[in-house]
Structures are given as C-alpha cells and as structure tokens.
Image 1 (cartoon, rainbow, N blue to C red):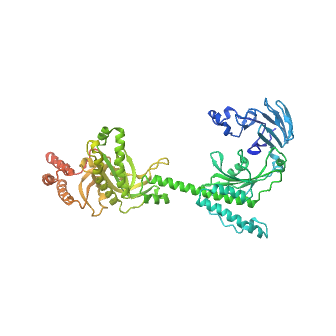
Image 2: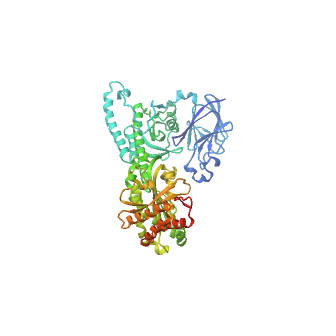
Image 3: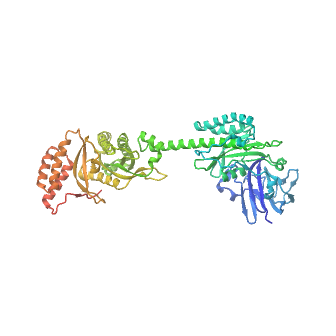
Length: 618
C-alpha cells in the first residue's frame, strides 16, 4: 500500500522539521555515518541535520542527536494499515513511546492507531497525518499574490489602499497612519544606520502584534537568527517552521499559517500562527526572512490577516534595502582599498563611483617601463633579506613618481615597474605626464643612492622606456586577483624600448609616437632607428632632457648632425663631428655608440648600407 504522510517534528513544543514521506517510516537517533563529518562527533550536540532518507523499502527520519541516549538508533517503525490508520512498533530496547492520553508503547510493543497521531519520543514530539486529509484538518499556507521585489525594483503605484480594506473603512485607514509612520522609521534606519535588524524585529512585535519577531539570514542551507524581539522571555531552543521557510524559498513570496483545531487540541504541541516574508538581494535571491509568530497559549490563536502579512513584507523590504546598502558600501570600501594600490586618490574615488570605467576597452595610452640596472649582481651581494628591503625602497620611490603625475601603477615584475597613463580615465596629456614622471624617477636616483650605495658597493642605475599608442585596457588579472592594465603591441614595444636603453647607453628613451605628443618643455634628441626583437617594423628612438638643461640644445644639435651624416653613408664626416662632441661630453653614451657604429662602417665599408640597427636582444 502506498500512502503519503506529512511528518512534523517538535523540539520542546517548537516545530523544527516538516517533511512528506510515501510509505513505511522509521524514527530514530543519529548514527556515526549520519554525522556531517565523523570527526565532528564531539560537536554533534550543536548540529543536528534533521533529514529524511529512503533506506531499502522504508523511510528513515533522524530526530535526535548522536549523544541523546534517551532515543534509540532505531526506535519506532510506522507501517500503513489503511489510508487513515497506521501500525506502530517500538523497536527500541529501553525507552517507551508516550501518547497525549498518558498511555505508552513499551519496547517490543505494537499498536494500531488512527491518523492524525501525536506521540512523544524522548524530548521530541512527532505529529503524523495523511497528506490527502490535510485540506480538511490543516489550513493550507496562505500567501500574497505577487513575489517579493528585490531592492532597487520600481513597483507600480497601487490605485488605492482601499483595495485591501473593506468598504467604508475610514477608521482602519486612519489607524494605519501611525503604523506606516513607524514602518518608515524602520526603512529610514535601514538607509542610514546598521541597527535596522532589531528595529525590524521589534516592529513585527509592536506594529503587527506578533508575540515574537526575528530576522533570519540564510547561510548555505541553514537559517541563522540575526535579531530577535519578543513579548516574553526568549527561548533558547526556538526553531522556525521548516514548512513555511521552504515555501518562502521556493516561491519568493510572503506566506502565513494558522494552527488547526486538531493541532490545538494536543497539549504536546505548542502551535503558532506564523508569518514569514523573504529578504532578497539585488539579484532577487533569498538571503533571509523576516519571521513572526503568535503563540497558542491555551486559547484560539488570532489569525494573521492579509494586511498584517503585507506590513511584514514592507518591513522585510526595508531590511533588504539595508543589506543592499551595506553590501554596496562594503564593495565600495573594498574597491577603494584595492584601487588605492594602483591609482591616485582622486581617480580611486571616481572609480568607486563609476566601476564601469574598469571594463575592457581600447584606449590611447602611454606605457612606461622602468628597470633597475645590475639587479642580479647587486642582489647577490645583499642576499634575499637585503634585496627585499632594497627593492621595496626603490619601488616605493618610483611609485611615488607615477602617482604624483596622475599615472596608474600596473605591475611590479621583479626589478621592473610598469605604469600607464590615458586610462581608465581619459588624459589628453598622457604622454607628457608619463615623461614628466620618468624625469622625476631619474631625479630620485641620487637620493636612493645616498641611502644604499654603501651597502650596494656601487651606484644604482635605471633604464626607462615609454611608448604611446592604442592598447586594450581593463582587468588583465582575474576575479581572484585584480590587475588593471594594458595588453597589445603598444605594451610590447614599450618594454623593448626600455631594453634598448642598455644598448644605447642612456637612461631614458621614448618612441616617435610619444615624442609627437610632447610640448616645448622637453628637448628630444633623435638617436637612431632600431629593429627590436619580435617587432619587424623599425622604430625611431628619442632621448629626452628637460628644455631648461644647460647643455640640452648643444646635445641635440651636435649629435643629430652626426646622425644625419651617418645615415647618409658619410661615415668620416660623422666620426669627425662626433669626435669634437665627445671632447666636450666624454660621457655621452649614445654618442659613443654612434661613433663605434661609424668607425665599424668605415672599416667594413658595408654595401649596401642600412642605417637601421638590429638590436641583439631585449
């Protein structure tokens, strides 16, 4: 015979579990294999997973913890006799089963009984009834017509409050005014403070007239009481109705229930009228519930009206709004802490307000790479701890140069720093800002050397390369590791330009694309055309100096005259010009390199001659 039963489990007269089964049933205590984790046996007293599972041809419901010895592992078997009757057998060895009339079913005994039936096993009370008779014996759950709306959803304006009140209910409308004023206080606290949880629970008691009100938050598959207010002393063993919360989860609507006359007759069960409204996140997922109940108390329980359910739902939307606000504020705070690692304070505030600026897009940017010279050699002297301290100091100084000139710190790659201008916020003068930051870095080197030269055994050198062009910018990291920066050929070329500083024996190079966007505050000396590794197109490189440098104009004029001669194949003229230049500026690295190339051309007499220099490495 196949029957369907609804089983309700009560702990100290509080409903803790409800489920439906379709056949023979066994009730008993938790076994070792039914623990969430066998190693958690010591903590099982605080965590009982009320659960129903089918074992062979019989359902088993765990109603007691492993350490509750007053209930046997296999205590009671219930088999259907007919639609309205069941056979009970106490299969435990030590403890009887009690009934409301004072009778008992001792170990080994059997008894046929009509449904619905109420019985006590240890501290648990169990009520079993046939599902098909539920309509006549138990009022179905009632709910509001529409699903609860997520925070931020714009609801249509109701045509009239009179649609939920009887005709000529002016007095009822007037009585609602203080209620709505108090409800607005709860909603306003949700928008401005963090104590809206207890205020909402208190409002369920004071304004809706419930005996207790609670804010429940859902974590994984369980409910946690966040706030509770009650007319009477709060019960430590209180548990919500699993039936009403399951319906709330399923439909995302406000539900309410009232006790049946059959249930109220049994003193073993403390029946309540219950209402629960869902608390939703911005995406419409249930993250909690506002829960209220009225006790039976030996008298007829006052039914929960549709209006009261609507008022509870209104309060629940206030709690949802408060949680959404806290989530938004926390996200903004997290974003600000995260952004401040890379961006200026001004840009950080803008990004926190407009995070869409971080989405991937194409932008014209200027990319800077700065590399510490002789890192491997120096780190070998300092050791890991000393190297860590040194690099931290150097990168801190270089980062200040980037941020003080409105740049974005993209990454630290060992002994190299990468920075960007032009995104996420458009900067018309991004090339100018990048070059000013580079010169600021170079001006900081003497200060760094003053602190470290004695320990390093030498002066620290720096090479800087800048390129300008279009790149794809956005979060180039992942959801776990944020890294805002650029991708594409523009970035690769900027890195190669920095590497070219080693071959041209200079500290600061820019491409022609960057040079074209600078103003008269810089003197740009064209050094040569090179072909870098993995980039076929030749690149024209420039060395920058501030225009107020005393030797800037002479540096540019003398060198570029020799460069034009070299590129025209006039190697003797080039060497003569460079010789005079080097007499005055013997430490001019690019001039020494060009002199070597010109002398080598004189010796080898290349034919045909190509002035583009293929750099040997990165």
